[in-house]
Amino acid sequence: MDTVTPEHSAPEIARSDSTDPENPALAPGLYIVATPIGNLGDMTRRAIAVLGAVSAIACEDTRVTGKLMAHLGLKKPLRRYDDHADAAARDALIDLMRAEPVALVSDAGTPLISDPGYRLVRAAREQGIAITSLPGPSALITALTLAGLPTDRFLFGGFLPAKDKARRDMLTELASVPATLVFYDTGPRLVETLDAMAQILPRREIAVARELTKLFEECRTGTAADLAGHYRTHPPRGEIVVLAGPPVAAEAPDEAAIDSALAEALARLPMSQATKDVARTLGLDRRALYRRALELQGETPATDSSATDRPATDSPGTEIA
Image 1 (cartoon, one colour):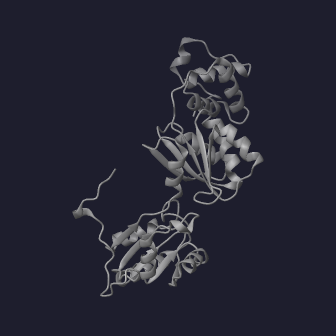
Image 2 (cartoon, helix red, strand yellow; image 1 turned 90 degrees about the vertical axis):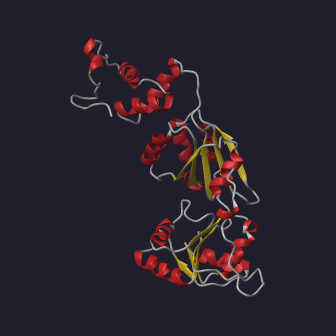
Image 3 (cartoon, rainbow, N blue to C red; image 1 turned 120 degrees about the vertical axis):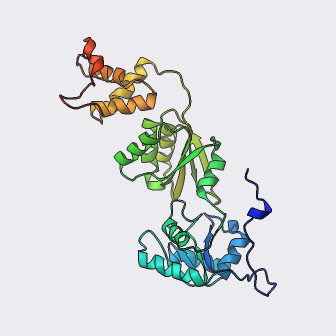
């Protein structure tokens, strides 16, 4: 656990001559403020005080932030700053920060975590603007603490791609990372994500966390295949966090399991890519799998001694990818 020593402690909010703690006077700069991910009771006193003291608030959606401000009884100028914000909008905020305190919030959770904002923070830092970050709610951290998966090392992958091939490619790329994998997802895409995980991460423990901090909060664990079956008949709504446990040592699969995995992969992929995916998933030698794939398709693999000295191919001149 990190410790905070006096010389490295973050300065408290600079206050005006007034002793009213609800009306602090802030120095000019950028204030990154985390907001609730579902339960409005998670809004910290410090965050409320800062939002009440800034001159303007940069936000993803002025309607969403406007509702939060109304709940808090606050009224401040709201400036839209999202993925589509251009350089002119960013420069205007930077200019304001030179003379006034400006807050940055997202629709829910901690800004910059799979949300727009890093370009604004980067620009502020380059311009020597003072930056203060207020810790608070985060779906990523909340889900990690609920899932019961290893937390000593984790990798956050943001939102998985919407298209199936890109999604599978990303999962395949990350399959060998020795850490818990964490992704954001949506209700309509969850089953597709779990189906892909069932193929690429079949033996991993998976957790699906949803409705975080709300009345019907849920964190369900199991294999990807089991969870896909559940959510196929119980379609979820809203934003979701999907976690996959790190790779674990397992007994070598038997011949039937290998043949089944190869047959499934060959049904949707060229031979070279199919054997590559199965090799990564099962932790087996790709060339041995390639020879077995040839046998399954009724072809005779090369047996001469030179076969091991040159790359196997799907067709003349095409090396296995």
